[in-house]
Length: 145
Image 1 (cartoon, rainbow, N blue to C red):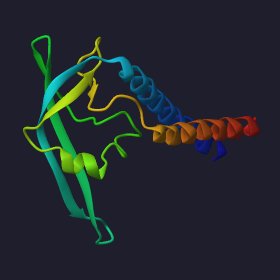
Image 2: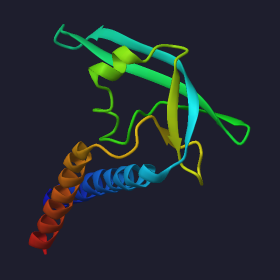
Image 3: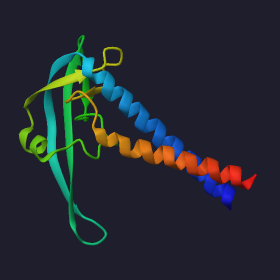
Image 4: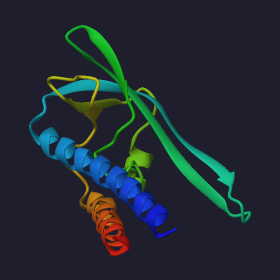
């Protein structure tokens, strides 16, 4: 049983660490990405009831932009912890369908984009959790030997 828990910790920790590290690197690289003008295609707030009957909302954003004659679509406001913290109330109120936006895109992969340069410091939360799970999994495996 200990080995199963250890392997689960290693797999989950590896996934969290890797995805957070990629987000962190892309966010840092985005500071020097070129900017093009894009257009907001959709900006809406979806409301529904959760399992406890409380109303919860989720914001959706989609924009399009062109690089070297090819059109791309994006949804990322900025690089953060799995899109959980990208939307602030100000961004939600400010962006409407048809608005022009500044889009920062990767020069080598133009389909990777964001409306804000940089990375949210909150990306450190899943990174730390991933490293912690990797450590716990390794300790559990070593204790089983």
